[in-house]
Length: 322
Image (cartoon, rainbow, N blue to C red; front, side, top):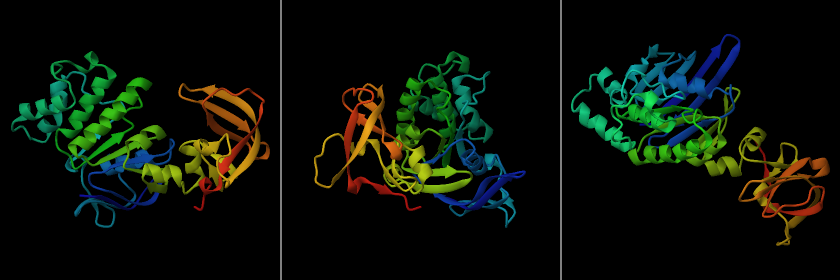
């Protein structure tokens, strides 16, 4: 079943955290709410979870109304059959791995074959042999797996992820990103994921919903969001952008060429401003005069202050029309 959001809005005093919003989260898809701090993404997630009460609007899971200001319906969080993975894992410190995962089943009275069901979840997240350990005896990645297993063991209609990887170090975050995506897809879950990290959003999602100041600016596949941003903010927030006309015409760094290979290429003069080595390439900052600083990629180091000519294929210039 799809989650349908209609006219949902929320304010905190004079601050409008979420303007009236319409959105559908499709069943079986991995959807990400992406945006900077304060854009309304976590507020929206908490309202879906039942942890925050909207001012107005309606939430439906299929035909089941979860919230409706007009019909005065507000189903309690524990009755929505959603799983949730928090940023801080929120594991019970006095409970073992087994008991943490079993908690939701016991709370809802689903204790039939509990040991078998929990053990299957433990095997799914590859924590066999750790059933009797307590959270403080686990690494950050292992705690994250326990939190995920606890969220899905009840077979929820939807799993909500509130920036679950932000507390992990960079290397572990990369590993868990791949692992989490694989688990979600292997189980066939419907997932709604909140993050401010564009790499997480681009690499994990079937669909990205970009938010700013309580409004949805654009929704689409990662490719659509990156290649055809509908708003200047999206072009700046996701990836790197070089502007030929402020907030209007842009070119991505990987589309800047160092040699003319096609007749339709236009030449631009600039000066090497800075060079950063990233292992697989050099990030070159170009001073393009009135066009400002551009970023381009190169396979070798270029001398600072060197005058250069770069080339752009006209068909790769993107016009922002939103």
